Image (tube, rainbow, N blue to C red; front, side):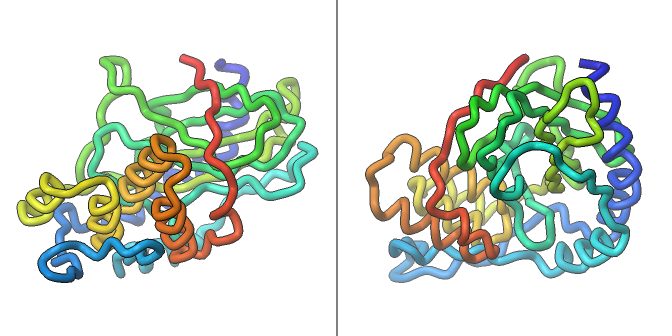
Length: 260
């Protein structure tokens, strides 16, 4: 694993330290705005789930883009670009100590991928190897809740990156996608709403309050449990379209084997 992550560290750590550090000036640790509702209930009409991005995240993302990202020229035979499922700001908020990350995985001849999570100082706090099996679609990576992986801290930002390992002997050809997740806390009012909500209502509450990671993971779990539910499918398309990811909204959610 050290050999595999050596290039990954060189590729992302400098950008991680510089870009993530700039986010703190714009952070709001506690979030919670009234959720639009009809007759006292959150809006849950099919296809009406829209993400509302926090303004301060947009300001942070501007600095993030200006600092730039190091991009290697991928050698994998893929017909679509590897992509992190994050808002345009590249920042996904979460209330979870152990969130789920989502990526679009293109058709590729790379047999393996590597996921890594860094803190604000560029230190790796979690990494895992994934078996791809040439199955394109939306994939997820869960951060395991165990004693070896510290929980994400509220008010701090982390960088999640995935790399398609085209050649394990020469990592310079990896295709890489990254996104930033920021752990926040919810107000008592929003927590109360969530306690009374079903999966579709929770998705709306999270999305309307700028909590991207949890809106996406809640809806993805509901879709996987109910793959033939047309309302959930419409919600999924609407949510992705609201952050300009509509081109992959109809792609399947695929399961990828995650190594320890």
